Length: 526
Ligand SMILES: [Zn+2]
Image (tube, rainbow, N blue to C red; front, side, top):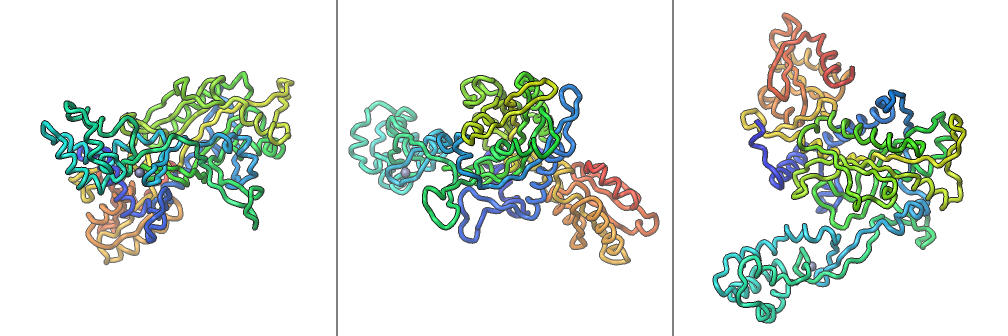
């Protein structure tokens, strides 16, 4: 049934188009030409995102799973400000070290993340065009290359040495290399600019935090940052939470919120954007129990993504190799990613959805040192004072939303809508469509009453009496609505309605009074 589903870039193109057409995701400030790396969530997108956020909050704060020994978990929530004291980011290492090596093009002045250059080069239009020209070249390619450099090349890659000075570049070509080796010679030893073929500078550091100023004076004293992660608010509030609530170690602090990173090359739709939402938990425990809790959260977090319908070959859990462990995890050991096979994941096949890291006492110790305030804990049961160790499951809400969209996207030409979104009923933005079969004989009145009842007691619903029933189903399938309920001529006689299931297209009769409990149960409200 899903064999018509495109893959890779073609799939992303279809998905982006459906998301815009149906109001899931819009480019930010589109009427002004958009702004790179920023996105807006439309009427369906905001419901979907909030549902994913609420599912996380519920399983983390309201109803956490039982712990490894069957004990009840204590997790409390926080909502911290986006701008905090700038020294927070000194303590966390973001001011000094939160930067990526960057390369600038000497010709077009574009900035690239050094570790993205190869991949961008692979996709560069001028590189593909040059490759084609080389492959077509006969025994002596010089003539064709000169023609390419003066024609297509001058438009696509004005910075490339071959284009700027064809005579010199071609003179240095050995006579006997063809095809791919020739192509390498043309590119030279260094990687050229993916945009224009020009020369890139050596990699330099570039800080990813957005800067702003607090107050009327714009000087170094007033400089502040938009948070690049939500985690630090949970560390600098550690003492406040201990003093104001009844939590005892082990316990967790959870937060969902916006974070900002001035990504140099935002790409892959909302996956790498400059403004995004995170869902993070900091779990504080005794150092001797850290490994046990790390193992617990590692499997628990994977299970949660599975429970939202991401199960199967597109989801995996990957432990980090020793050489990719972050500074804080080096000695303690333990960092893994829940990964999803996004259509753009390319050769690696998978990209990060959530990271689970054993951060040891790194963060609390850093904030203690920088602020001069002791951030430790007196454990009455153990009669011991210590700095708790931390396990951090940090998930991307925006990335989760994209994974859910990719997983749900289905192509089935045999249906009224050849494209449909198979969301988990709990995440679906609209829970039910309610239709009178015809707009007369009192059917609209019955349907409208049912629709209002569903909105009040189940969740977002849509009433639709326009066009054929097939077209109405199609609209709901594209929006990912799991159930459609039709009031027809029999309803007045036997008080039953038709329930149509999105995934199978199957229909069954149900008493009208049974509709609400039926939906509540399937959506997971009961
Ligand atoms: Zn360039």
